[in-house]
Image (cartoon, rainbow, N blue to C red):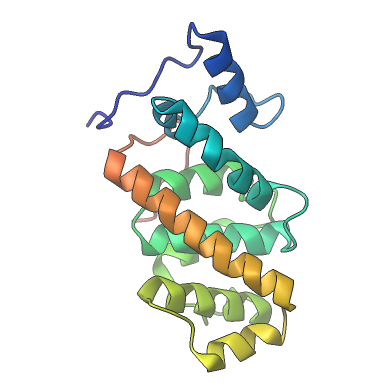
Length: 187
């Protein structure tokens, strides 16, 4: 199935648009700009408005470890059935985050208390699950997060969960085809 909005070419003729797409990709990326980014490029002002938050969440200033960040992202994407973004993150960051195949698969079919998750990860994933079920976190879940995360980190957990809900909604709403190199949801 084709995406509902045709993405721009990987290297658009417009040099400003090409530069914006390059900013969305990691330096020296070995793959062309993602279909998601190229779809957003159909609305350059929206694309430019979204980039700073996305860059923060994937950047060095984000206060969760790479492993915890990727577990959060994978779980949110899995909970919203977003195979596209889940697959991109599983392939692009999973190994670097120290996530083996069983842990990555458990983000889709496991529960927050699965034995492959450490207690800090269980607390994080339980919070993500509760946020995905909506509309808010219980006091007990907020306190459980407080055993492992300070207030700034808990704010980041809330924002990152909401951001990847937005990204999941965008990818699913656009019916984006999977990137050829991305991981696939486990059967």
